[in-house]
Image (cartoon, rainbow, N blue to C red; front, top):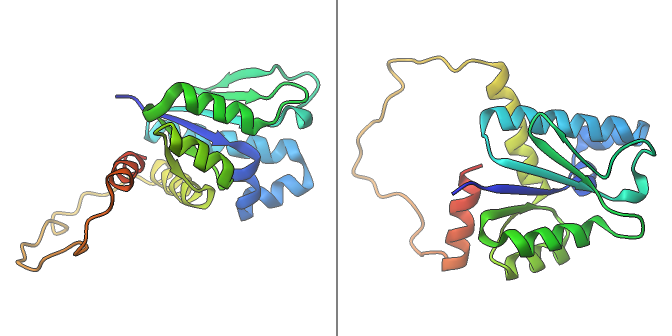
Length: 173
């Protein structure tokens, strides 16, 4: 089953220190940096990725839908919020989608349709790790193997079924 990552673009940019500083200087620079990070992430993890921006801040010559190196970019229509576009996509994709946003309204709506959710700062950490993995080749050390132990690991109590399913989906990122 292929995962579809739906990202609240401006929410992720404003939650990030690096992308937020770029956006304060130039909004287009913040969007471009986010799309560049997402394309790098897509090279490491080939999931479907769609980033949604508010159309009120879209460049005049930019189409409402675009695709750059496999990353879908959607600008909402005039008078429509990106939140409604994300909610509509979450209702369509259901359990195949992971919604990235820190907006509680979007998170509640997406969870109601069975989508896994991830906060913007958590996803940003995964983006940064993917960028580092793409730039540095992992070295294969022979001494970095598994060490057997009898010590028990993990929590003593089990998460709820919904939280376990959410965790399984987000671990694939």
